[in-house]
Amino acid sequence: MNDWPDGWTSDRRDRYGSGSGSAEPEGARAMPQVRRAGQGVGGPPRHAEPPLPPDLSPRRSVPHQAQDYDDYDDRGGHADDGYNTGQVYGRGGPGDPGGPDGPGGPGGHGGAPRAARPKNWKRRITIGLITFLVLLLAVGVGTYFWADSKLRREVDLSKVEDRPDGGKGTNYLIVGSDSREGLSDDEKKKLHTGSADGRRTDSIIILHVGDNGNTMVSLPRDSWVTIPAFTGPDTGKRYENSQNKLNASFSMAGPELLVRTVEYNTGLHIDHYAEIGFDGFAKIVDSVGGVEIDVPQDMKEKHAGTNLKKGKQTLNGTEALAFVRQRYGLAGGDLDRTRNQQKFLSALANKAATPSTVLNPFKLYPTMGAGLDSLIVDKDMSLWDVKDMFFAMKSVSGGDGKQMNMPVSNPGLATSKGSAVQWDMPKVKQLVGELKNDEKVTVSSK
Image (cartoon, rainbow, N blue to C red; front, side):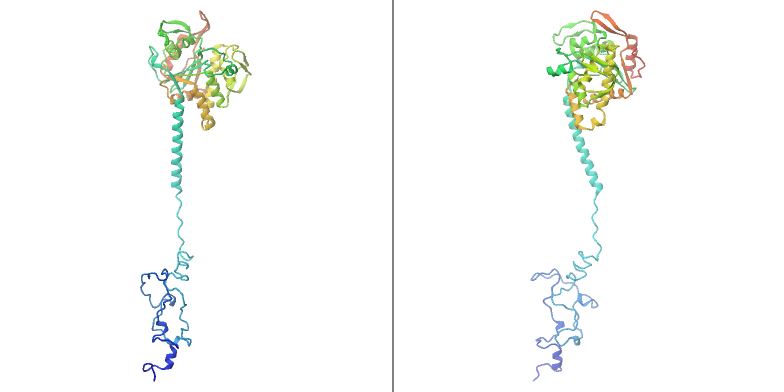
């Protein structure tokens, strides 16, 4: 008895493969070993993809059940069905052109390469520049407050009596004193300063800063002047007008009386006062590596310790101090000394303001420290005023201004206090008028 349905023969059965317990052909069976990419074993299935059109490749879709069964071979399988056991079908298979390793996938070489993210150099440069400027500002502000704190604001110009009206421009009274403050016995010997107590003026200079050029006017310390009435700062005693040498006013009552004496005899209003002693002067010169100066003649003098040859040379602190202090042995005496002082101060300012000093912290800070530690100024003088004074002296050295002595009529006036210098008062009045009005100075020293 034939168990097959009517119309089915053994031959037809054999074509479906012997041993099959299913009435369906092999091609229509489900293939449980096939997984879609991304679906783990036992994991939840991915969302079903819509059926692909029938004209796609057998490798990208399951063949239709209407396939011709005559294509099966005698071994019970397809002659060429395009299936591989364990092959993953659909998009994303290991060998699939559209999969992650295929030429069209993100890891392949067939698709367009991902564009490299451009580096934002403009933004980086901007951030770097801002950071640099902030650091520079912080250093500048810190340096300003550090330097400003070193100024010795010990002179109170508000105590000066009967002051003249101010004019145009700014007038500084620059004083070099013979103060030995802070010097050891060995340093006093090295600098030939002697051991006298207190301090006296070694140089007195009016520096006028204005729009028509800057002017440095040296006042010989032996100038014969009127010392106006004043009240002794220590005793409270009242002193009447007297005739004396200019530097005597400093010895009597310090900087305030010196300022009052200069104003009384010139009629010129002094806006700021600055004073430096022997030690500070020598240290500033050494901190900038010495200053080149054209020595006008052979100079050798035991009191100042000078031993220099004529001509251009670089002087260290000790040599520079001797140069500006020498008065004996010079043809013009004290007048020649004041010229040497102006010349050297201008050269010192010019050397200290060079980029090699200003832009080099290893030179700038020692120079500022040496100068500001020993600089005595008035209570209203700011660090900016010091800067203006300094650069005004530099400009005079560069030719943008004038250097001169106070005009004199008698450099060897005999007085009760010894030989003194008498001013040429008509020329002095003309000079003061030009300075007050900030006009170009036309007066000569002679």
